[in-house]
Length: 262
Ligand SMILES: [Cu+2]
Image (cartoon, rainbow, N blue to C red):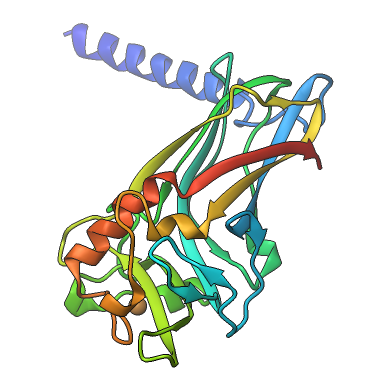
């Protein structure tokens, strides 16, 4: 009857080796201090433009969309998910999960990416506009301001991907309100992935800021020129066609700006 005892001894021995190995392995991230020579870090800085001009939130209607509507912006807030910068050598910096951006809250306009990479050439920046289904779960963001983006349960729950609001000059000649609210609707996902070519960009040693521009005018054109009068006053949250148009028009809404020292 020696076999059971042998097995037990081997088992104990194996356990102790595993415990020893665990004790000798540094915790992840230890010894990787920031600012090592030759290493680069990155924050993504959002900019919100209409036809190349930085917006100011206002009830005036200084802009003209592709269809010809005069409009302005009073609110802009949205989610970007899984921001990832890929370097030419394959290294990555990323901010996992959904990040809330609000034009009126400057600290939300800068998203620091985790990690550091050797300074050098960039390949691309990628992210999801909105929240992909696995992140778009009711209750996932219990606190304000993110919680204020909740999407009605009767329309499928989750969160608005974007609230872009303002005034436009209606065909009646009077200013009316518009609310370009996007989100998943009745189980259909209208978030979309964006990958922007960054091959002209370089990250320098130390902290870097990369400008990511939302060109608001592009929400309303290419491929579909959007007439505000077709949708507002009123709402588009229940309108699957409008959500599909925003998703398609959104493909070229974002562009990369320059990299600057942070
Ligand atoms: Cu809404």
